[in-house]
Length: 273
Image (cartoon, rainbow, N blue to C red):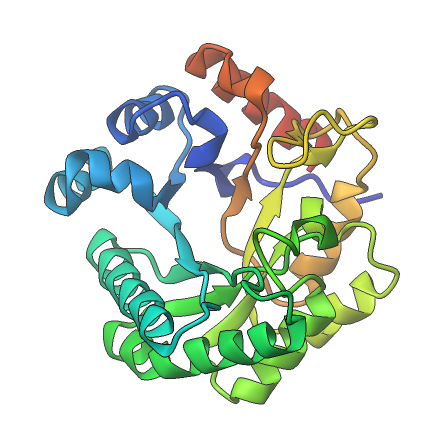
């Protein structure tokens, strides 16, 4: 039997309460005694970096990660440089907000050439490693489910992410394990073990059948088929002991009052993570 998770490891990935501003999400975390938050960059843009930082510090919240960097592939070298420059801005934002991790959603192929786009991903990450080192921010490669290859990421398995991390040869780079994206992988547990010491984040939600949507397809833990405790146990046993982010992208959840979402999230976290 899996050991019950400590509820104090819970982090609100802000996309779960997409209907809330950053200020509302922070206030919600305080009301519901959620000690950490993962912030999305479009939410920072609404308030500005300085006010966002002040709100977080006033609430004494940990920032478990910043979402997101990545999106490296592009057809021209100038476009790819623009993506790199934007990732550097994201690193600066992460450092300013006190986040040790920038999540990388690596980007799709703009020209149907997956192999070339994967090369651009590697080159993009390689180019920002020194900048990330300078700011003390780690880069977390998040593999996405293969159904997102066309519009979100050409890195689709934890094995790919591990191979990419190893090829870069930098401890500044690690991987993110998101159960929604990797639960189906027949090599998942071997790859979690391979990632030992390089796991920078762990995200939870569930895979409901039938899937309600592609982008907004995640459900609350306990509503689907993923063996979340088994994956969590494997991640824990391979060196990850930090915040566990609840990341639910789902219109029905978004339409709920935010306080109801956080109550449900905490209850399901204890029961199903």
